[in-house]
Length: 354
Image (cartoon, rainbow, N blue to C red; front, side, top):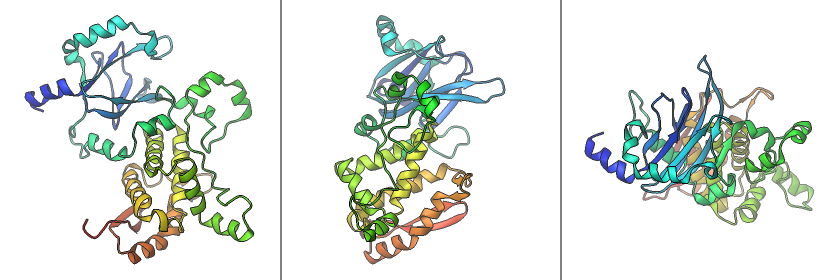
């Protein structure tokens, strides 16, 4: 990066100052992480928009400990200051920090320049992936409304609190563990995922025929939650799908995986709903899913308990439904999804002039 570009970024991009960071802390932002050195005091050149900042301990063997992180929307030229509290081995709350010190740091920010690591705007070393472009593609539908909808008030994630986070997701918690949990902490870190009950995917007072139909085809359930929970906002649904993926993959909170998995099973078991959402929701969903799957090892989706691959079986069941419907409507573009070396070919919607 040349000096002129760096100077322009310095004055327009956001900055995070990290005071008193412990040595050998594992620190990351979005799709990139490092084991920090003794001179580290934060990150510069942060592009405006949504970012996920996370950190965790590293033992003498180089193994990473529990990860904690927070989501933050950075404005242009914004400077935020965080400080490490060794007593709790976490960041201090904003209310605990010295406001005068924060203002002094912001005023003298240039003095910190040499101690600020640059946000990875371009591939580093032999990396073939542009970290920032990858982050943008994985968060394209996540806006401030989605963040407020799902995350705790301060946007913070703690993966060691996942066992206390039973509400709003399909995960369960041992009753004794729940009794011992601090209800204040439990609520503080609760993820407010939309409740999707795949076992009750048919209408109330449904006939035997309807129960059979909508137990196999989840279209009724999809339409119901889009109307009742998302108020018809398809981007909110897609944003939650993307956020649940980030919460699990980078935040390392298992509830994110459970919600992500549930939403995939729901979408890939819908046939009737294609008539309503084929050219909108399903098109965007398949593009997002295909993009997400680039980062997973082939054996990740293998369920040790059931001996089944939920994603592969879901895709296999629905391949002919998607092909026939989409080809019939003449809206198509080839999408290849590789699961455990099985290639599934999907046609998703694009108008003729795309």
